[in-house]
Amino acid sequence: MNLLAVETSCDETAFALCDLDRYRSGSRDWLIQELVASQAELHDPYGGVVPELAAREHLKSLPLLFQQLDPVSIDAIAVTRGPGLKGSLLVGISFARALAFSRGLPLIDVNHIEAHLLSGELSAPLSYPYLSMVVSGGHTFLAHVEGFRRYSVLADTLDDAAGEAFDKSASLLDLPYPGGPALSALAIGGDPLRFKLPVPREEGKFSFSGLKTAILRLIQLQRRESPGELSDAVRRDIAASVQHSIVRQLIERVLDGCRKHPVSNLVLSGGVAANSYLQATLAQELSAVGVKLIVPERKWCTDNAAMIGLVGMKLLLNGGEFSAERSNCDALPRWPIRDLPRG
Ligand code: KG4
Ligand code: ZN
Image 1 (tube, rainbow, N blue to C red):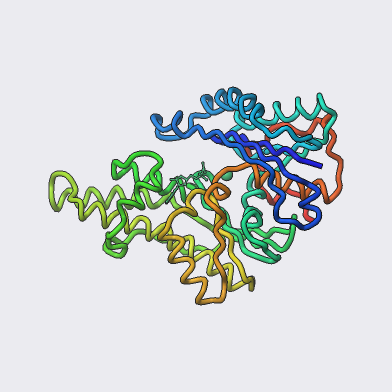
Image 2: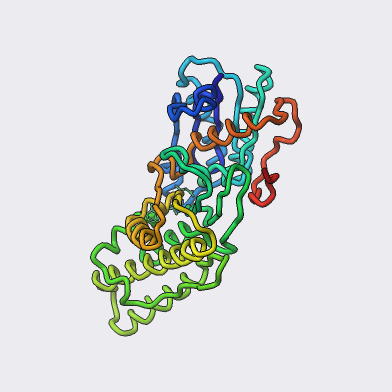
């Protein structure tokens, strides 16, 4: 039996073909094929994802990608139902639903955040419990994963996501979008402790909205002290200090989590997981408390369909009613994992 996973929650159109029998038998070799069409170039000129354009592009990409799938039988379909951009979600869901309906296949709706949380399982054999942190452009989220559908949220963001904080800070330094990689490149060789930027300490919460104001003030102050363009050295030190302040907050929350929940592994995923300063500092601090850092391959850190397939297979194997006729597969732009039924 094979399952086709469909992901269109933001700006990647992705399919994954998964061998359910192999997965059921415990084999790690269950991923038959992955296809992804990135829209990055389409949105770059706008400095962020344009929802209307994203939805239209999914509509174009889905049939094109579908034609490139290996000619294997498809016996079930899993699709991202949310959270994400409403229009983008609707396009993927409509596609998946039409396919499931026309072929009489089960349609499994998957929560995108849950898929990120479990994405560590794509690259390493992992046993529960573990901690999982998702840091992307849209989410910053730390959870204790005790098993499938047994999650406790340890920290969540009420304002900006960590990736957004990187992007906004980068734009204040006139760096191109997406700002994360540009800012971390600029930070190389900079002094992360030269400028003191806020690191909110409240347990259970991530907050990055104060950072932008602090950076603006810092840049104004620097300009007052030495009028004209900021020197390269100052820009480098600002970038390093910004990166340090974002990373510090992420690490503090992870360490809070490790104190409360003894685990052997922490999974780090999301686009920001690519940040080498974050990876290096986090690995070091975690090893001091006996925890191993697991970062899935880059293609599985960012939005992908393999993680949707993984959750789809778990749900299917758990039993449950998944007929394509079910009416409750509408898009859920907001869908906190707290709302998932507990296993
Ligand atoms: O998961 P992702 O690819 O997609 C969305 O959430 O949409 O994450 C993208 C985010 C962007 O905010 C980008 O600036 C950030 O991940 N990012 C980074 C790095 N690479 C990507 N942030 C910091 N350092 C990086 N090396
Ligand atoms: Zn995502």
